[in-house]
Image 1 (cartoon, helix red, strand yellow):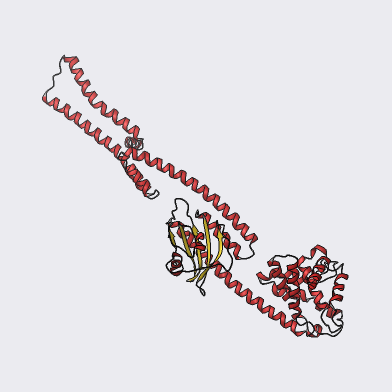
Image 2: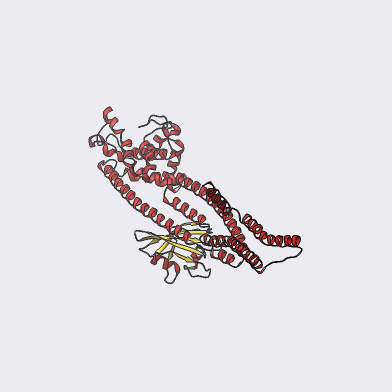
Length: 487
């Protein structure tokens, strides 16, 4: 039993040995056969003085040598066949990971050893390229995450985020530039939403007409991606917009629920100008998600616009209830816009001022009419109720994300620099510049409007009253406001 086990272990050790060890063992065994025959002939010559072999002995000797040669040939062929099988298996495995060009290059070598050596060389090169690609992918991913973080932290609306997606997609696909276009079905044209990698100035009114026969027209109406490898193509007209599109390029439609929202174009594809199938699939996925983002943004803007218009109408209704202050909201909004322009504020800040002025007294909807329209001074309880209207107004607009920049102005338009205002008794720098502007416009209009308990002030007297409030309101802004009244 132990002998059988030792035999199996010996055979297994031979099978597991290297090709060089097998070759050496077989060479020694094959060499022993002819050496044994020669040694036998030598002993005959030495002992008998001559080599005398019978016909039977000669036949046996020849058969012994022939059998040894056949065994050696079979054994060597078996070793070499394992090497050839390894080469064939290696080539089949490489077909799944190498390009056809690399496979053809390997097939040109008929020598199995050369093929095997070339295979290992190609594998090494592929591994090195994969390592480089992984390093590049890691670097790209880090860059993408950094940009996404910056975009989220600084994004005021979807525009900045769409620009970020366009830039990231272009860099990920090794494009030289990119363009995002929005489709307007009612006019059958495209507007330029974002441009990356090109020095191109555009405006909201800059539209691209869809001409029949152009490739861009076919992308719009087929709602399918398009890859253009050639440079001499007619993609878009007129010539004014041709610089936005540089072949080789790929154009992906932005489609959501079978509704076309626009087109994303990646220009000047790198890496020999080829766009792999995986690249196109990735771009289509990005375009699909971008279309969803645009669709959601449109729906959100429509809802918020409707809400703003609704509460604006509500504020005007509250304003109309008081015959003495009717038109107050529109006048304050006009004063704020004029001051904003005079102070050189950005358009976004002027818009915040205008919208806040239209809504700053919205909270009075929560104040009883007998308090709002009381003829005469308010008592302590009534005055406490009146002081609640800034907080009520803020609570109405706060749930809407796009209206949150108005909350500070609506809540604090009755605050004073000396801390005597309400509802939070802010002081000095705690009151923002926009709030200071709205406060001055609100006070001036109140002074120049008839009230149940007094007549309106003249313009000069109202300006004097503003200047006398040197501890309560910003006098620099007061002077700017008076200048706007005189211009």
